[in-house]
Image (cartoon, rainbow, N blue to C red; front, top):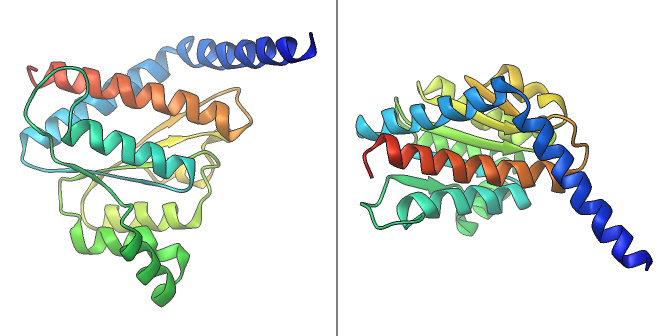
Length: 193
């Protein structure tokens, strides 16, 4: 059955990308460092901001809601938000252009000591680059969940977590969501929850 082969091959490819990511101790250390930075920022009274385009925006929203809402167990709400308000995005996009939709938000809401998580499967999204630049100008710590070698963003962020092997956005995003979940789980443990 051809459909069954297609499904099997897709799962196999997904498993190979995950195995490739996990085979690198550097990748695992970077995920641990991400969690440590989140816990440190939250302890200091700072917040976590996230952003991305398309499916990466959905992942940024998912990330923020699991911090403010609930991940696995009950615990206090943690300070997080995603840049995903349609009125802000359309107002800023209309008045300043699409490249400014995230940076403009960070200019208004970001504070020194906050952490910005950016998600970009290409590593080259102009609006994400501007977001990182705005965050760094504010004294925020920046983390990139990236793909395809990390692109330009890899050298702009404080911590770049880049998915190796995968060449398609869907496979990269599958690893991104795993990193998000594991970083949240680890952060909760570091905070004593």
